[in-house]
Length: 142
Image (tube, rainbow, N blue to C red; front, side):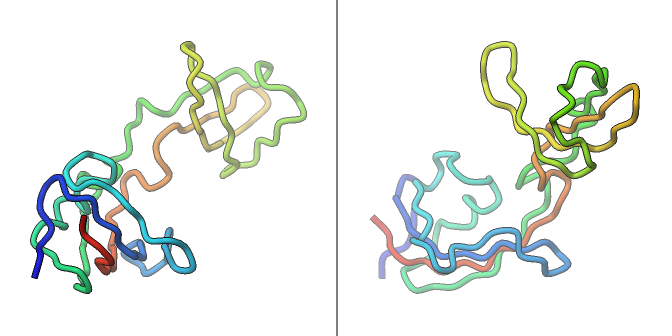
């Protein structure tokens, strides 16, 4: 039976959960996720779990935050003056916004806190600082 090795293109079905069991993503009802093993297309902890698996094999993979979306980086939080944000932009904590970097790249941010003077925005990935669990099933290896 063929086993996955670095450089193979694989397709997997998956369900990703937090340690408390809350699902944050799943391929259920969608096409399987396709990626090249070892190419950096997916988080490192999941990528490194692929070699040696075979088609039809199922596996539970527990991934520490450092091998997923990394720890929370305090430097990715920024206080900006409230007057710099148009009044029609919602600023409730948890609201997802998109900013533009000086070089024109889109940067998703989350409102952490807002008051009359400042708005605190967080550009960390929403899953930063979280240990993750994936239930995977290998669908194909090419």
